[in-house]
Length: 85
Image (cartoon, rainbow, N blue to C red):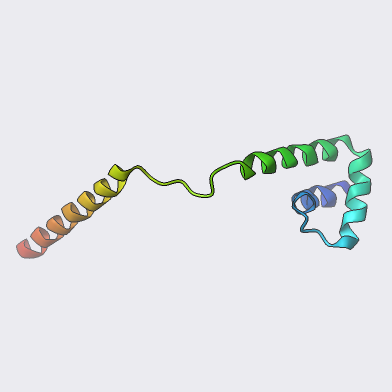
């Protein structure tokens, strides 16, 4: 495999999604290529930080009130527009 082909496989390598057949050549390349080795370490760091993020984020309570108010304003504007058409 070429350097460019392996670079495109690094994400899958780090996340464990590569086939067994592809893992060996990628691991061999990473062992001798400083660029790809650094990329793998960077990807691992990103995944580790991402794992610490909350799975979901609740919006503030007022967000739903603002959305509801905007919907009501749109309904009223649409109703007024229909009446004048």
